[in-house]
Every structure is written in C-alpha cells, then in structure tokens.
Length: 545
Image 1: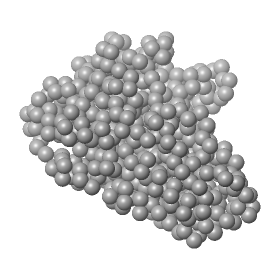
Image 2: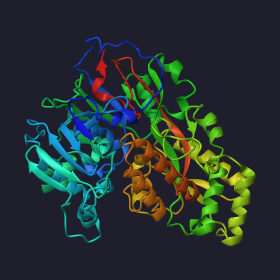
Image 3: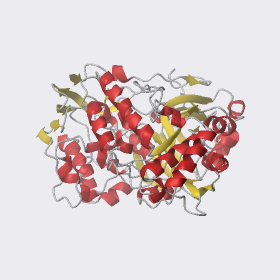
Image 4: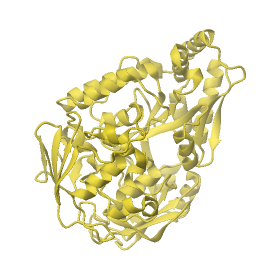
C-alpha cells in the first residue's frame, strides 16, 4: 500500500469514511462567503483538563479538544473523518508492517524549534516508556519493542521499531502487520514534541509549545476558569483559523453554559443540558444541531470487584444490563436524542453490525434479569445490605438525571438497593477511576480517536490498555483483536472485530447503554459552526458576525 500527499486523504480512508446525518438550521455562511469578523475571539464550553497538556497523557475531552488545536501530527481528520496529510509528506509501506514516513520541511514549534523526524520518534518513545507513566502509552503497543519499554521496571526507553533515517525521514516497524496503522496517526498520542517537553514535562504541560493552528496565549490557562488560545502565525496546514482565537470557558455544569449561550455570553455549546432539550430548538431558532457521531455511553463494572467475578459475577452483569430500560431513559430524559446500543462501537463507523450474536443481553427484559440475579445469588450471595453504586461526576449534562433513573430501574427490577454515587467534577471522577478505587460501577463512554471499530475495542478492553477502566482481561479477546489488526483488508478486519465484540457481549466488562448524538447550539454572534465526525465543533472554521 502507498500513502502520499498526491491524494488528499490516505488510501484507507475511502473504506472507513463515515456517513453522518446532521439536522438543524445552518444560519448564514458569513465565513464561507468571505465575510464576517475574522478577528473575533470565539468562546466555547469545556471542562478542566485532567492533566498537564502533554499529548501522550491526554485521554479525556477537556484536554483533548485543546490538544487538537495546539498540536498537529502527520495527519488530521476532515469533517467526515477522512485523514488528510498535515506534516506527512508521505507514508509508505509494502507489507503493512514496515512503514517509511517522510515529513514536510520547514515546520517548527511555537518556541522556534524545527520539527524533525526526531520530534516524532522522541515523542513516541517518551509516550511508550513505562517510567513516564503516560495514559496513552497503549497506543504504541503495535510498535516493535514496545513490550521492552513498557514493562514494569523497564530500563529501556527507546523502541527498536523506530529509526531516524534523516531529519525528514523515519521508519516504523510494527510487531505484526496492521493495515489500519496510518489511520491512527492523527490521534493526540502521536503528536511530535520539542526537546523542552522532555527536559521538564510538568512545566511544558502548563505552557506547551505546539505546532497546531493555535497556540496558548501567555498565561492562557487559568485553571478551572478558562483556556485562551490565539492563532499560530507559523501554522501552514489545512486547518488554518478564520477567527481571532478560541477561549474555552470552563463550566461546572451545562445548565450554566446554556444560560450563557442564551445571554450571548458564550458562542458555542457542544452539549445541551437535559433541562433544555425540550425547548432548545425553539430557543435557538436555526442555531442548533442534532447529529450522530462516533461516540457511545456505557457503564463500567470493574473486574476487580469480588461480587462480579466468576460465573455468578457474569450473570449479575447480564442481569443489570437487562434490568435497564434504555429507551425509556432516552425518551424521558434525552427527549429521543440518543439511540439504544446494540454493541460496543458506533453505527456511524464502517463495519458496524446491529445483529451480533448475544446482543439480546442489551435488551430490557425484567423477568429474565430477575431470574439471572436470583440464580447468581444462589451461587454466591450478594452481601447483605450492600448497595449497587454507580459513580459519576455530576457536572456533566444529564449525568445525575439518567443515572438516578437507571439506578431506580435496577432497584425495582432486581429488588436490591442501587444508587448514584455523586462526584463533584469530571477530573475528580477520572482520578478515582484511574486509581482503581471504585467500589461499584462507574459512568463511562467513548468518543472516537480515529475512525475504526478497533478504536472502540482495543484501548478499552485489551489487557493493560490505557483506557481499560475496569481492569478487564481476556486472552481470547486479545487474540481476536490481534487477528483483526493483522487482517489483509478492512472488511476482514471488521469481521474479526465484530467476533471480538461477541466475546464482550458474554463478559460485559461494561454495559453498553446508547449511541451518542451531539446536540449543540451557537450564539447569534458567530456563523459557520460545524460539528465533526467525532462530535467536536470545528473551531477553526467558526467566524464572528
């Protein structure tokens, strides 16, 4: 296969292109028609990033949306999820295992350092090495030598599969053939870094020197208040800003953000709160969107909880899943704005199937749920007086409402006490999850990093994966995922990934709930507001009026 700049998108993208259906008014097209105030600073909602702004240590939406504007990698993704070359001059392979990557010359970081092949190789090695404890290290596991640098107590910190040829060229050798490897290269973990990031990672994370369409304003990260970005005048890629900057206002809840939107104190909101879902279209006129995207909502039941181990634990997982009336919650809380999950990925992805063997466990069946719970109880008694808790941050739109409803359904169907365990902020919840200190289930979900079924599977359920919140491990699943990655065609890979999902439908490390749709809105002060394949606003194309 050959990937080069002569085609706008990488070859594989044709098979993986997404089909998104967007509804809502578009307003006028001031930006597209060359008008509008291109000096206006756009304000948008966000949450406080969990960690410092380092590419390999950012795996949540608050930090992710900032990183994708501060940095760019070998490729980026267009509105429909197709890869487009950014720093890549060419990405070539003969066997889908050994890749030669050439980068464009002349690019530099905002601190003036040139971007070379070393900028990528050093960043990827840093991200993979166990001693650096980066959350996204799992994304490098395909590269030959990852096992030696990622093992606990490893002293090696460079992967043998990465070689610098010259300033503009490096090679990547994978442990096995993986035909979708180029698709991943637009994800945050694969961004390049300057030397300053390795000299003092903590300081760099507070004031990163990136290479993307924007840069952090001086003193721009005011923790728990705002993050101010301004255009990077040296950026020369396909995502050139047409506004004067983006300021992310950090909110503790979406109701406050929505009120700011109505008051014209916020330009873009990417999630309408449940309290406004019934009326937001009328409130906003033609300034709203309701669009499917590559994302889902789930509930993690950690594998380290003793009540959910073994055969009895498996039956309890199934019972809880079948005790949830997903459609009732969607209708009553989200006003029909979601779609009941049939598996673990997203309908907008190529290869999706809604008829996998075993997916009846995701259908509401109160009688069957009670039968399974009682059967598990006879094998291994549920602890007397113990509540089934569902941990969630309550600063997100609808979290408190839908989890309370879900807990009530579980209580009424199974005859146990089930309740929300509220955590004030998303950052605090993610810390609790990451430290493996849950005593019950937790709210979860996934927003795609790149357009592939595997992205919803490997990073979340592979043994030791960085986003494997529940510590789930099944060698049979790991083997099936590896087979899917090494498939010679995308279609064959998708078939194997769906077989992997059938294993997950038995084990239920998480309980799939519904597929996401972005329900957002914008103020009268901006135009050209679009939402991408992953549900994130395309900030660089938004202009002021």
